[in-house]
Image (tube, rainbow, N blue to C red; front, side, top):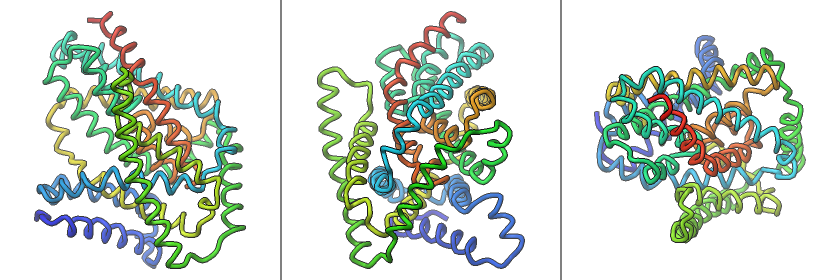
Length: 399
């Protein structure tokens, strides 16, 4: 079965999400309750759409066109709405801790790439072929896809190796989001094992919940229409002004950021500013945040085919080694500094996924944390190229 109509594609994604959420809320089946307690609906939405994509259900030009038209605008709208409940003053108290956790993830990824290169360079086309592509992938896994593209200007990257690196990036980005979402339900086990200090993080969530509860009122149809229209208008305006700003930066040689990062920064600024006004107290913000989150996750998964796993097997294995080292080092650092899984997961996806996707995991813990993911992702975009270049020079020592 292949869906060949854009509206049918969107209808299918949202209907699937609705059925899963409805089943979790209203099921009386003990089996289903146990299944959803272990793997929440958000993860099922992601995994099932990945399966349908792999089966070729979404393999049509109409679906691809619809995906391209909706993905980024909905992402920017989601970030804006989530940030309307963000108290930047409270988040600033996490500043030093946020940076430390993010840098811990960045250093673990850099170490992982160096180790993977030493082990697999002979199976990846030889050291001279592998190191530029792996350095580009490292830059991507710390900053984002824009950083990966920028690395092409820094080093001569073999086209075949670059294609393999892109396959690794695509596969593990998709898988990693699913795994981090699964771990949300089991965060208490990690936190207990590392004796995590969650006091400041919980204070942010408690303050946000108290503020929302104190001002909560039933949303009217006018509230819904206004907040939806505002979110979409901000997304469209940010896409336009962000593109202009990115072109201006490139024209003066500041091309370390991709256009997506520049637009995300602009949306973030607008969201944080609006959160300090009466716009931050509009009803239906939490509900619309959830709806946009389910829509974005569905869209991302709909293009995450698992067939890429067979296109570059040794590169896939090398990428797995990087992630294993990333997790092991993160766990050791968490034991030493008592880092909680919420912040670690957010920092991990901010590294590997970037500023646009990090809020997905952060808000799965609590919508008040969305700003943390965005800020970490933007920081990663700023240092991604430098980290990739540093790793490149280290790998050349082992050629």
